[in-house]
Length: 374
Ligand SMILES: Cc1ncc(COP(=O)(O)O)c(C=O)c1O
Image (cartoon, rainbow, N blue to C red):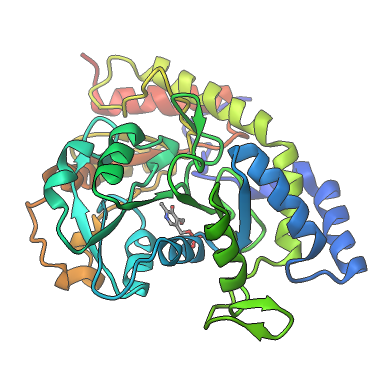
């Protein structure tokens, strides 16, 4: 492949992925239609078993989004009106929204700038009598430092819900993301490492009681046909998504290995450039959902990359405590400096299994030229 300044390197390429899976996907969708199992059903059940095996958990409850998984996970931990839940501000809004859905208040703690994840050293001072749970987010596929988080939670009798929406298949000290807390939320949004062809999510847990609650809560609190134990939700996964996700799972190990290979190539090619890369603990396995770099004059760098045909994105341009939606959270600008600085400097580079080695080289060399080298 010949990559030049006139070639556009897309930030993401779902169409190419479909081209490679078309026959398998269409056969799976046809199976759903022939069986008319459009909501939950055998395809979703089969996917639940396979995804629980991947996460090394006893249960997987398939849902219609990662946001629903966060919501049900918090409810299962007993989070309710007036409670506080500790989380990070450097995440997608849904992490905080799910806390708000329970009538609870998100309490934002700053990140460790090396990993962009919740800094465990800052958690304890944020705990009050109202604190009920902690939601660590495994941002960009890099698992948060769970051992100290679990230790603090256990000492204070708090629930831990992993926001693993970006961390399918990641490992922390040998254990899978999704198996570390009391429960974990996954998203199968189409651009995720394991992406559906529409909305999708799941709650994983080793706790029978949490799984039982989530299974009833996703379908109007039903424990038997038209037996409604409590007021629940319509958070069911569609049969089409269960079928597509099974196809995607067959290729997941290969796609994950490719992500790792691409991340290694980026790291090698960007060594010595005037930028910062997130820290990967050698004991862990990052799922590499995104490949991010931190640079000064971020918007200028992005626009120069765009001029040379390289599409980029920003995850996320504004921490949650500075979003209008959370203007009343009482955390003024400057209070969470590492998160604010990360949001001002972060760039997501093109990153997906179909990316070619030549494209990575072109992107890395162009970025080196723009930011300079030591
Ligand atoms: C960290 C994080 N949390 C929560 C979500 C919400 O997932 P969904 O879009 O499936 O509701 C996402 C996905 O966008 C995410 O990246």
